[in-house]
Image (cartoon, rainbow, N blue to C red; front, top):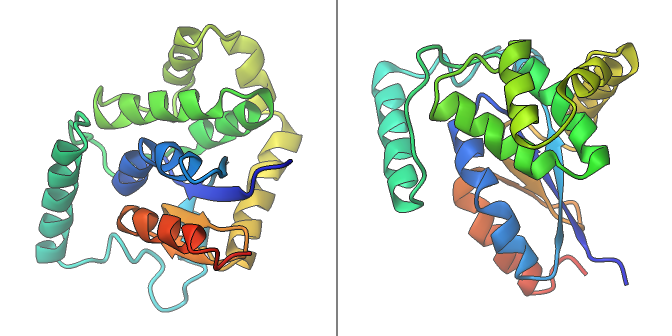
Length: 204
């Protein structure tokens, strides 16, 4: 019997996605669901907003300070290390393309968590090939072969199509989980609510 699938849409530049990536499997698999990792880039999604092409970055100084402190508190509660990147937000394009290869090969979860560590703990430039190659090598993977596949035209087109799919489903930010019934829950702070929705059987 196939397990119900929960789509986990995430962005490597997002600190809330960093936190959610370390919770989502534990929360949903306890409810008998399978997590489908769906890396994306928020830039094209934000750019489609004619009112404000980058909602996060246009936040007021007070809101930015609050969000930073909020992330720090949440990481402390989850026992996640945090070292704010010297470049923020970072371009995660190469990481997202590489993660797509991992989706097919079965190592996307470990890879994604390792990339988050490189960004939010080790302050590495996750859009640079040597950084991603090092992450792949630590996972015992053939870095050169994977990076070649990640940068292939068909894989670049695949990421573009995945972002368009996310938009078609109504995804506007990350992290977002999409339940089997199509319900969307945006934000790390909505993961528990999404689990309760599933447990109540509302998606059946």
